[in-house]
Amino acid sequence: MALISTSSHDAAALLNQNDIVAIPTETVYGLAGNAFNEKAIKKIFELKKRPFYNPLIVHIKSVADLNQIATEIPEKALLLADAFWPGPLTLVLKRQNTIPDLVTGGKNTVAVRVPNHPVALALLEQLDFPLAAPSANPFGSISPTKAQHVADYFTNSPLTILEGGECQSGIESTIIGFEEGSAVLYRLGSITIEEIEAVIGILKIKTHDEETPSAPGMLSKHYAPKTKTVLTENITTELALFSTKTIGLLSYQNHFHHQHIVSNEVLSPTGDLKEAASRLYNALHKLDQLKLDVIIAERFPDYGLGRTINDRLERATKK
Ligand code: TXA
Ligand code: MG
Image (cartoon, rainbow, N blue to C red):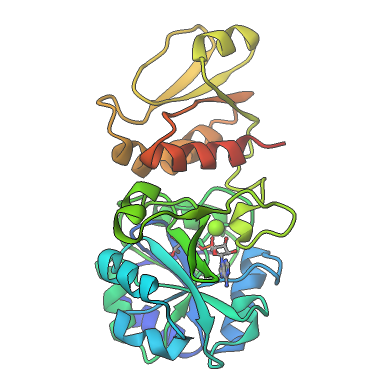
């Protein structure tokens, strides 16, 4: 049985024994363990059923700890850290040898960020080591934005989940790496391309290189509900195609009416993309639990966080 706890003291004790704990962050809940300890990291991969080639993000309490993890840090990385940490930006940097190969998937780089969540930061303060943590969902499924989502995924595991409320951003961190002096976007996330380019100028975008993914979060099928999900530009047209089925609808601003709609999650009636992003996964979790024939999701405007939301919806609807 997974257990939801409010004690960061208990969580710290477990982590000190190289056990793993689910922790809140501002993006999604993570499955955390001592980033320096191979045994702890192995437990994360086992519980998540994640392939070993897919590396983890290391969470540190402040930029001051960056040198423990990474080396030869580019100027642009420091500018980004300064602008966005603590916050939902992950930097892929040259690794230090203190980090086990298991964390980096054997790469010579390591992914690192400072989470912007009071519970996560208070926990990191109590520890002598950083926390490696992937999102706290079984490999390939929707990331959890509430402690209860994690508990629902791991009902049969003796996992402690540290309660931190609902995640404010609700969508994973943006991942940026550096190749030959240029900043490269590996995963769209909570910080928009526009926000990043305002700090360091033009970004190269490499999120669709599916043959050799730099960030396997980019593997095409990912973030997927169990229910068949389709993405559409036009809900009314799509509804006509599914006239005899039970339908869950995920729409941006408007409610739709149709006799077969069992539930309609509207992500932001006022058209606020930030609000829509923060509600996306919770809405998908809710619709998925209704065991409907199909979830129909509306495509978002393709800028800012709309672009990130579309990326996740595209992956959720890949066959
Ligand atoms: O918001 C987040 O980033 C959440 C919270 C818990 O921090 N974490 C998260 O972790 O989304 P995960 O494991 O679900 O996704 C981590 C992504 C993967 O796509 C992985 O391939 C990429 O980070 N990654 C990790 N290390 C990398 C590296 N050295 N080079 C390129 N990509 C890397
Ligand atoms: Mg994930």
